[in-house]
Length: 447
Image 1 (cartoon, one colour):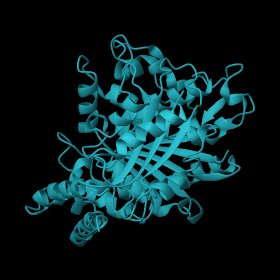
Image 2 (image 1 turned 180 degrees about the vertical axis):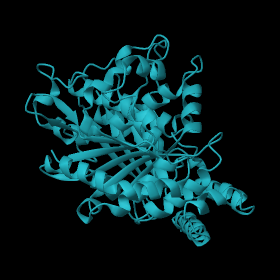
Image 3 (image 1 turned 90 degrees about the vertical axis):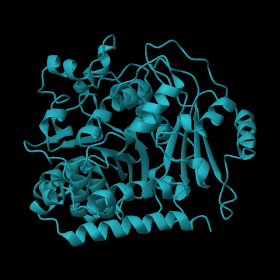
């Protein structure tokens, strides 16, 4: 298997690492201390895309957790106390295994510093530039253990100082060998209630990262909480719950990389299947079924029900109004005991739906993968579906972001914080022009 390295940057990226790597371990039969369960799926080669097997027969994640602020990464660092970790992350009645995943990570999986980015893009960018040699050395050490490195999967907040600035700096300064690989990211975009500077950070980060990421999955917290509320109305979800939800979706879309599959078996296929032109690389995700541990089990969905749900706004992980646009490309990844005829019937129904319209020049539309990989010791063995879709409706999503930027920049609000860190006015203008061009790029897909 060709190796993938996961980069978890800033608070959002690191907090997502916890449920995601716990889930990977359960699926591959790896205990949370890295020891291998006898007869587990990892006794073959399939796990090696995401784990490195050590001489003492432990599995270490191919992951690097990076944060300028040590307070978050410290919660999962081996040197932190279990008491503080439980206090920060445990929910009443939750399984303590949710928080002891820190035993899986070694000291080489972490890089943290003692000064944060203060939620300012330029501060994160400058601090990243000063620390790039440390990150580069750590990544080089990880790459030496890879037989056939295929690229990075990046997890970050698009609007955070570390997630936007530090990540941009990192990829601008990485070696050409690393930058030329396929880079996929999951970025959490600003939504209602986000920090005031996030529109600035997001626009600046989009501009600087445009040429370094091949495919960027768009999610936002507003959609995730709406998704939870509308699917499990009796349950008040938390950030821990929505992170688990995202972890389930990521697990499904990477299943063909981690196990044998037929669609998106390596990172390059995401770009090939979803990105018609290099700049329009911002698909959104949908996922079904939506479940939470400890909540009364919801009715099992049929394959037709799963497919229908993923084309509805209630299961969309970003506040993208797909019904107002047209789809450019869709990847549907079914997982579990799924019959080919059931999938064919459900897709025929979707194609006949008035809410699922494709641009005229993309008649094939659907790319379908079915992965029967085991879900290991996870409680949920029901079939699941992840939809990744690129759509002209991203134009409106980006327009809303641009509008939030313009409201502040028109008044020159808060720009002094960026100027104080060395950012110049023309850099604001250049970034904003680039996101305006991106908006136009998506509009032009309709023709």
